[in-house]
Length: 275
Image 1 (cartoon, helix red, strand yellow):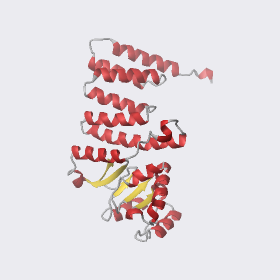
Image 2 (cartoon, helix red, strand yellow):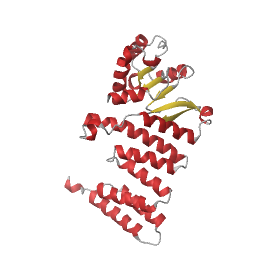
Image 3 (cartoon, helix red, strand yellow):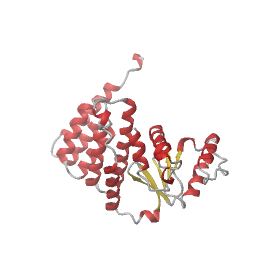
Image 4 (cartoon, rainbow, N blue to C red):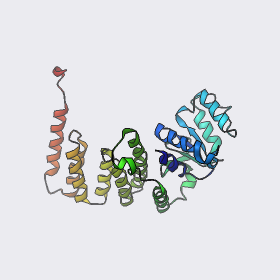
């Protein structure tokens, strides 16, 4: 968990602003931040907890910890975040693990474990190749979250660390899918599934990237495995039906899985008289 905090801090350049929302990311990062090298301001990074930014008590914490941040205009909780980011975006690179709206010219782009705030014009200078290389570089530096204790047993508290890394892979892969690059997306989806094989959505996205590449047999085999593992979820059956429609239209197997889906729906329905 401590290495998660270090990986998050090492995602950003010096003098950056990091806004973290979830407890796992924030408290692990805060621990490393406050104990790192005995420095009050770790690499001149500003680390704030996004979820409490609108509360008066936290304004006092921020003002006492960071003398260069002006909290005097933080009156209305609904506008604090927008005012803060607008004040900081020309001073520091801004990162967050949660995307939120700033204005029409601002866009969040996943870079490793965090999202970086860019203007639309700056984003046009980043090619897909550069974007993939940047994420590869970051993930190669990170710890393997499935090693250590989690290689032996899955502790609920430690296992949430794998969620942070798995979600980061998913975000990159989703972006590459939107850019019509299923080959690169497949690689990042596989990493997410490796870390969290129990999350059906990740595996279905991986299967979809395989189907986009016309890897019909691979997509079919993965979907069949998911249908066996997630017996009470109809989404693998829907995907299998689509696989056969797209890859094997000469067969009637698409109808077979549509029928199985209807049977599953009927089994999952509860008669009101049974309540």
